[in-house]
Image (cartoon, rainbow, N blue to C red; front, side, top):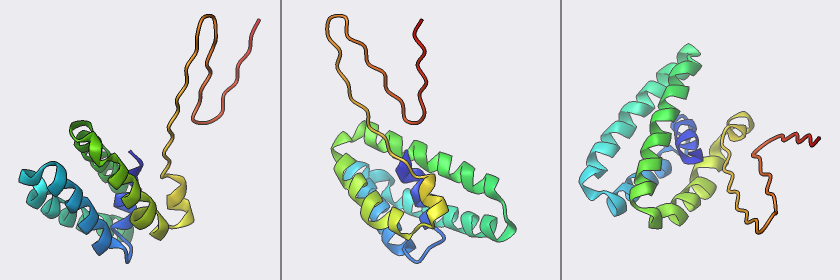
Length: 133
């Protein structure tokens, strides 16, 4: 999900060409039949992001990030072997070119736990308050 947010943020940066090439490359490996369509969709989305930023329209940018989060999620659901490559694209191409404020919106959390017998596991991606009585 972080990749969709970072991708939309990168659309307005100098890293755009590398970001687009990386994302289209993922589609070529996972869904070759959709790669050309994704390339065209990315170009359209970039145009919309640039216009939204010029107009101060955060809502459009957030909506586009949601669309690309879903598309990335579906790609990974169908092709889980692409996860390391997507992580590398996120870490090396997308996130480094974002502003500090945009980086705050790009979070990736992976939680794993195992409890046995009568054990308990408490996990949270942010604040967690546990009150036992």
